[in-house]
Length: 261
Image (cartoon, rainbow, N blue to C red):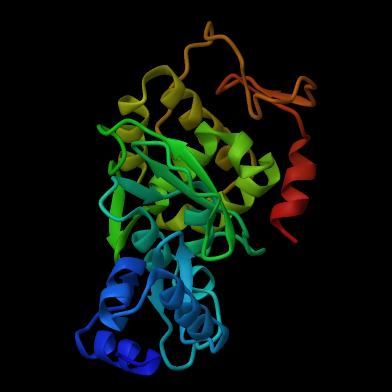
């Protein structure tokens, strides 16, 4: 029977960074119960990490004992979602792209189907079901997974402010990534999502304009257009951007103070 270390050594020699419970059972030549005990011992030694039910990742030297989802999120998500069409998105994409100051614990993944996984590598998982036509729109392959580009991450966060948590956090991300954004790519995304997409583009444009950020979006709004909310969850209005017809639930000064500190 193959020993625990022999299993890891063989997989690494083959260039593998993940394996399934079934593969381990065959390699060990043991019963499922015995295999489970062996994998538990490998996990306790920090040599493998259980990404999700039945799927394991091999920990590399220098990262032994750490969670795969902490130091290699694309690997963890790629292992967990396998062949499912997916994308690391929203707060997770913003964090991976270095646009947020504070770390994000929950893993946000857009997927073309709902999945029954509460966690990925010991981190809570939030899955957003998305259409196949848009799942990889402005997305880039990263390791074993896909991730939103800067443009997509900011756009989808303006589309779903509820998933970002607050207007201040969205503003923080825009301030960090504004110089890297291609306005034309954002405009293409807005067109692909119709009315909701144009609303998201207006939110981004309003934040960038009011906070004097280096992001120039060619967003034209008819003065007769209905006013939209910067945060759809908030009823209060502190200021209305008449040019872009966006009602802010915070003053410009309040949001600016968060971005500048």
